[in-house]
Image (cartoon, rainbow, N blue to C red):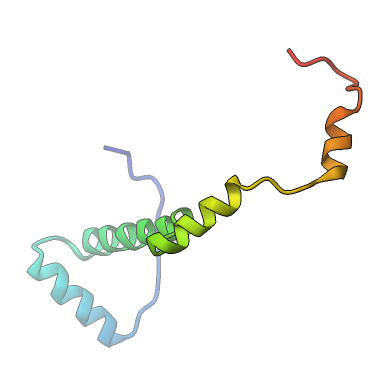
Length: 89
C-alpha cells in the first residue's frame, strides 16, 4: 500500500457534506476514505474515456476498411525514397 504523504483539502456546502457523511457511514468507512475511493473510481472512468473509443461494429468495420485502403501520397513516396542522412541501426 502506498504511503499517504499528500494532503487534499476542499470546501463543500452543507448538503454535500451531509450526503458524503451519510454515504460514508453506510459504507462503514471514514469520509476521507469514502471520498478518496469515489474520486479514484471517477478518475479511472474519465481516463478510460480518454483512452478508449467505443463505436458500433459497423462503424468500426468502415474505419478499418478505410485504413487498409492505400491512398496515393506522392509527397510521402518521394520523401521515403530520398537518401537518409543517418543509417538505420
